[in-house]
Image (tube, rainbow, N blue to C red):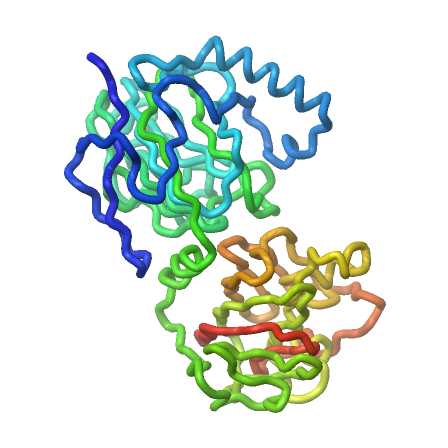
Length: 441
């Protein structure tokens, strides 16, 4: 029988709530609005094959090494991957089918069909994986297959997303559809319209201590058994939608501390800031530390910020109410356009955006382009600080263990147990909005 590619028509809502699918199997010649077809039903235009490897290593290859790598993948593709009756067929062997393009924040639709003992997966940002397998196979039960497909199988045991929330697989031999939403490392998976992973971080299988790359390819895995694929389409997410998705999850317990109109409830350098277009903005050439009036111990904070070119500011953490928060507070978490040419070769890694200033460097490369809003969540518990920027964890630090400081400057406030939350301006018109606080027990 002739196989055709099908797309499920989704109804997306601005609140980033789960979309509703049209009747299963409804055929369409084009994907839903905003989606780009990744498989044309005829050939592998837009794809190549890669042996499974850390995408950081792939990106670091010189021209000669990359040419050999891709040549080996091409040989595997011709041997193990076919297009038959409008469907991608893999015999279970060979390199992984890989998009030519890298993707950052996106929504992905992909249909798959496996037979008995089928085992495969979808790699996101070059990283394993959204799991696919025969959930009825007794020999797979010890690995968790009876819990169904769709889980982030390479996450640590017991970690969010490791196991799917429900079994949503259709009978073996029938077509299934994934809808995958990824913002930074945050991954949501629907299998056949049922939520199986809810906004969990996809762990970096290749090196657990590193975050995922901001952008990397999507891959279809080979794993010893034939797999069929069709209906593959992607929609890249703009910054505002990505931020809305992040804001919509885990918001319980957060309270707004900025009314969008005034600086009511804020103290300190109130003359150095003003409210402009619904955001707190540092006055050009002014600044200082503006802080919210309620003292905090352990807490989580959410804030959106927008940087001008070369912009510099920071989040004051457990600030005592006077002095330079980078030293007398627990820390200043850097907010900096650290990719600007002004800073090229001039800043210490402990000054990069998201870093605990002068103490612990954050991972770089996760800021949105200048002029776009960034979404940051900070969690402060005891002596530890975690920073998640645009859905990717860029800092996980225990300041009680820091013994070396930038420029050998002491940080006497790093062990503070409480203080105020605020903004540490340095004269640039950096903007902040959607400021929320959640006290932690």
